[in-house]
Amino acid sequence: EAPMFELEGIASMAPIMVFAHIYQYSIPGLANPVADKKKLSGIFRSTAIFSTLAYTFIGLILGSNFGKNINQSSNLNWKDFTGGTAIYDIDNNLISIAWWAKAISLYVLCFPALDVISAFPLNAITLGNNMMVSAYGKRIHEVDKNRCIRTQFRILASVPPIIFGILQRQLGKITDYAGTTGFVIGFSFPALLYLRSRAMAERKHFSTVTFYSGYASYEFGAWCLFSFGVTMALYVVFFLVRDGLSYED
Image 1 (cartoon, rainbow, N blue to C red):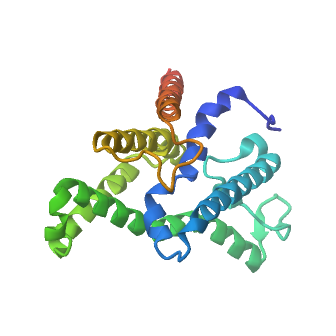
Image 2 (spheres, rainbow, N blue to C red):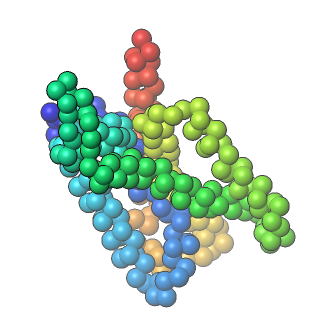
Image 3 (tube, helix red, strand yellow):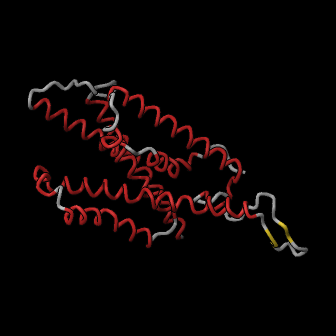
């Protein structure tokens, strides 16, 4: 049986939870087709609430069912799924399983890989485009139609993850360290962007209050958010390194 709560598990759970909710880099593309932009706040707020409830529900169900025997990638627990249709011989060797049980097992096992294959090109394209804009800055209009340059940046964005994925095949380790960046991406970077844009507005004597200003649109809150992201990232990295060293010993 698995305990309902373990304080030491926060270092493993927190970065994955944060990383699972990162989608702000896609907000411009997702928001563009929406005709009434005033509804965007409610749309994205509802999305965050729904995804949180969905992840929590799935986590509770899997944890209560598999307990401490759950794999780092929970779909692997369906490897021996039989649906109660397994037939064994007198030596307890498996003889046959219903075809539909095999189909369910295969689907659950393969779904994460198929899902990543479908999403990976979209993420690579987004990252490659952002890298190209950062590299060329104001001259982006001169090269944004250049297919060769655009392809080079997209390859640069997509090849390193593939190489590191070959070198490190344990999904749990990958999500532990990749999820750590979620604190910086989800908390620290947006706060820095706000502070930078606010400073620029003040320097040009623009109003710092815009249509998009909200309850969190103030300097102290931005610094708190930035500090929280950095602190949590360091906290998680500390425990990951500590656990890694203790495992090697």
